[in-house]
Structure formats: C-alpha cells, structure tokens
Length: 352
Image (cartoon, rainbow, N blue to C red; front, side, top):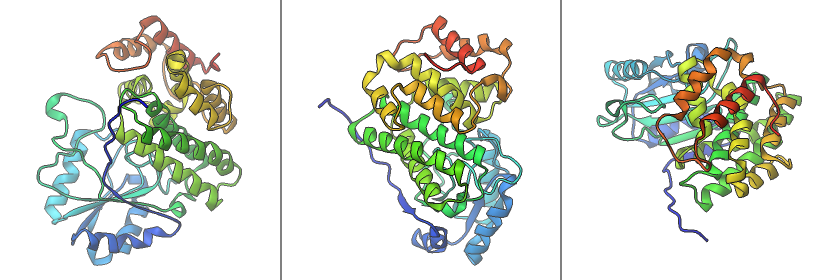
C-alpha cells in the first residue's frame, strides 16, 4: 500500500427520482432566506420552475451563465445577488461544461455532473472565478463549493441523447485521469472505477431508451462519482488539452473531452498500466483507449475534432500551448507525440 493523502469534500448529497422537491427544505436547512437561481439562457424555463418551487424563498433568476464562465459573467452574477439581497444561490443544470442548445432542459453541472441543483451560501470572502487556470489575481481565494447537491434523474429525461452521451464521456474523462493522477488515492480510485462502470452501462441504455429512468439514474450516479474525482485530485494531459482546445478555439466542452480522451489514454497507456486495466475493465474492453473510443462511436458521439469546428491549421498552435507550463503526467510531455495525438484526434482515428 503506497502512502497517500485523502481530502474529503464536504457536501450534502441528495440523490433520487423526485428529490428536487426537497429543495425548499434545503434552503431552510442552510438558514438562508433568499436564493438567486442561476441558469443558462436556454434553461430559463427550468430556472423559473425552480424559483416557483422555492416560492417566497426565491429572490430572482440570473439566466446568463455561459460555457467556460468568463470572469465578467461571474462578477455580474455576484453583483445581481447583492442588488436583490440574495444570501444563497441555486444553480440548475449547466453553464460551463458544454455549449447550450435549443430545447435543452438541463445540462452539465459545474463538477462534470449532469443536472444537479447546487445550493451555495454567498460569502463575502469568496471570489467567483472561471474554471480554467488564469493569472494569480484571477484565482479564487477560496474554492466555491456547494453546500448541498440534489441529483434528480427525472430532470435528465428531457436531455437530448447526443448531449447525454457526450456529457457522460466527459464525466468518464474525469474518472480516467483520476486513476493515474499524481495525487490519486485508493478512495478516489474506487469512485473512479465505479463511475466509469456505471456510465459504461448507462450510456447505451440511455441511447436505446432515452426516458428510461433507471438508465438515467445510473448515468447520473456515475456522473456524480466522476465529478467527485475531478474535485478531489489533480488532472493531467487530457484536461490540459481539452481546456486548451475549448478555451482557445471555442470548441464545445463535452464533445472535445469525448474526442480527445481515447488519444490521451493511448499517450499515457504504457506509463500507467494499472490505471488502464481499471479503465478498460469498467466498460468491458481489452484496451482502455479503444474501449472509450468504441463506447463513444457506437453511441453516436463525435470522434473527430474536425467535425466539431477545429481547423487543421490550428493544431500546431494547440500543441505549442499544451507544451507550455509543465504539469504532472504519467508520461513526460513530448512535442512530437502530442502533435501526433492532436492529429489523430482531428482525424478521428481509432487508437492502436
């Protein structure tokens, strides 16, 4: 048994079909009086339903959340909360892990979890910041963590199948990198493998029967576990590449994760064999890179960067950005190999 450090992330988790009804009681439990409901513009209707459920506890709705959460948007939300006297926030669905689409009822939550309601108390000493690393002055003085997260599979029934698949693959990426993270530990490894297993089982079922509540519950359960992994340990090459591609070239977040993941795993495979065995065993494959590639492709997800707006002429620049600011990764960063990784992801090649 190797030495490790495990830090639990305190949060109250409420999971189950129909659990959204418990939201008013959770606001009371926090000792809060007025909640600002946060959503993307496309999720305004869902946000208004939540506000209606809260009744007098709802201070208003802020529906301008966007992908990658620019600092200006976070500041605008905080200013709005101060203006209307909100002392807590309820975030419904997503806003930073994917590009919103017409008809979306609920999306990807702030930790890679699909369709949670996050409940947070506002604090004067917390800065709301975007999720990507930025200059020191733009980093949070304290992490912004939810006090309560409600996972209600019923909220996911209207989530389009394509978005469900890429959101699930995005979550799998969190767990996969958690298994070979430089700061991983046995508890996180258990959560990661179980999360991948749940999603590997759920995604084909969701594609076959989009309104199958049991399958949706499995997917949400897996997403919760994978999101917990993301919040608990450091990520590596895969996330560096995806944040580079998404933030610099404005690619949709979940789709980018889906496409890059098999190639990032192939890059690290020889340097992290035990992690690869766990990743491959969860969806029942023999090769981790091929298992996640096949899971995506067989369920209709994109597998090529060129199909989601990436230009081949930008691959060299993406490689240069990825090589900057060295960070822990099982295999050292090698420019030629990373450039080939990006080319394979651009073309949608199945990893060898």
